[in-house]
Length: 248
Image 1 (spheres, rainbow, N blue to C red):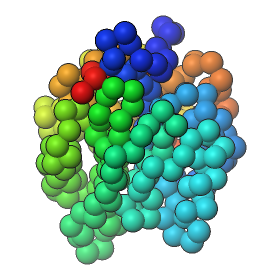
Image 2: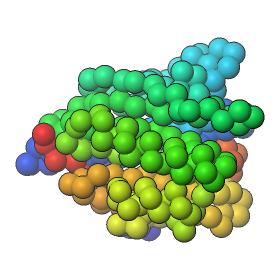
Image 3: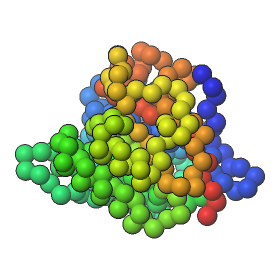
């Protein structure tokens, strides 16, 4: 596996960051394995899906952040599952949790959003977990691109569980309006579901124009990330992206 760049600041003031997207299935699996995977990826930003959202959800989110060497940035129950974690490199400008229109009989969905500064870069973030139903999923994908634009920042990224692969209508919409980091510069593994025998790419990181993608994929083979931990942590594989965000 090629080496994935780490975090830092480039001579031109741009921020080199690592972004992790991870569906953690409400931390119902091996918590210690989950924290080890996240820690080994050394992320600056973690965009979580299916974070605990019921009894003592704040305590669970705080445990995960503390055991991963991070802090809670936003989201969780108010966003119905999407959660944002960050390293101390990030300075938080603002956060907002967005509830999406609810279809009766289906799980309520939402977005966890934030604007942060890392080094000289100002960056918008959005974590999502789109619907299992195709028509609702497409409406949510459209809402995602609109919400990202509404953050009114020079650069932004969205990541999450799209609940369909790259040939799906909603995934294609996101890849048309944004840039699919795996397609731009693939690194590591491609498929994210399921850990034992992955055959589909339903989790992704997308960025706006101007952000340079240095590598993106499932961190299989990354030092400190073991196959046993990936299988034990949750029912998805994580997506790790290394990005260069211009100073702004």
